[in-house]
Length: 249
Image (tube, rainbow, N blue to C red; front, side):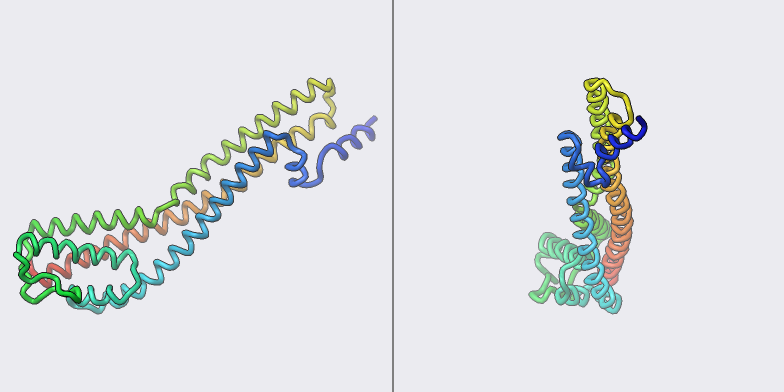
């Protein structure tokens, strides 16, 4: 009798996880297919963000190395004009736009921006209110750059937290289906129980294989994003200091 039961188990239970998926119920297959789609999306986001952050770091490094050598704001604008766009050049140009608007509104065009993006030597001094407004503009641009870099990163956290629940749902539904099958066949031996339970657990295993990389990816990119934000904030402060030194306040 024991040999007969073992033979039933050997023929009923596949020998690999893929075999379990192939022989699973439609509900379990649907859950695994959904998890596969989430896994593909999360890996696409992680690879795309890795390439994006790498490119931003490379472009920003070249620009910051040159920015450290400038002594005037117009020199910094000239350096930015020759570099590929990156968060730091966009922050710098936003400061330039703010100054141009201020000169048009309060300075009657005196000392305005030249065609080469330079500040004329007759540029008016900044008031304390204008300096404070410039700081607020820099903060707003920093937040905008952070939001631009953070695009799709929160989805990794969502996948990391939701995938285990989807897998648990698939497991519960699979176990329910297995017990219904046992009740229908009227057999409680291991040969009748094992296939359904194994198929149900494959959903949990698939969910963990999706959630773990997504959670790791989110934490890694979130840390890099916070580092970028701190560096851009420091750069904005340096830009304000450079403008104040040029014009006075």
